[in-house]
Image 1: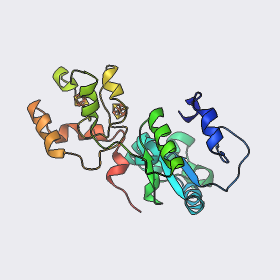
Image 2 (image 1 turned 120 degrees about the vertical axis):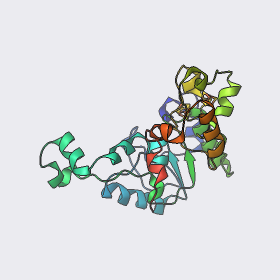
Image 3 (image 1 turned 60 degrees about the horizontal axis):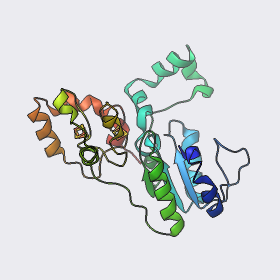
Image 4 (image 1 turned 90 degrees about the vertical axis):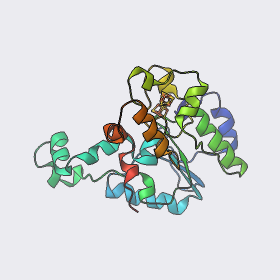
Length: 231
Ligand code: SF4
Ligand code: SF4
């Protein structure tokens, strides 16, 4: 998504020096002030690298769902690690260091994170707005109202009216409710709002003959790790 900012990249490059960008350049330096960190952590070695980044960077921004809440990778945590290693890499894989893997966690289970850019994928406009704020020395504004607000502004018919369920009432907006607008439902890729109105969500579910337990499984797709964080 960052690389798709073709129109904005020339201006960005006038304002910052990109010194380390694993996906886009081979040259690497370690003298940086702002670090955007993508991906969840599932190996000791990754946690070690992450701590080194935290020591060097003045500001650390979690970039995307995996980094912010653990994301889809957390589905892995539902199974025993040995079973997963052998399923993917073959019998005996759990004994080999090359296939080392562990419980998946978001990066703030290991380090302090200053700001979050949520979503899978992240909205380009949110990345640009956070970057602009950081360059101007101001505090980035991270959306903190539920997807339902954006969904209503977009003029969508609520999917509960169509017999489906949706995590929009408790999920952080900022994506313009894009999934509902294009015929889907919200699966919560941007994580929960800071103070989710669980009571109102439960009431909505009740109105449509549903219970909280009946939709809890939906949270497993993106928010499983966020529910249980350890530092
Ligand atoms: S529950 Fe889902 S479909 Fe209904 S208004 Fe909220 S985001 Fe839109
Ligand atoms: S509607 Fe929900 S699942 Fe879709 S992008 Fe927005 S937060 Fe993510």
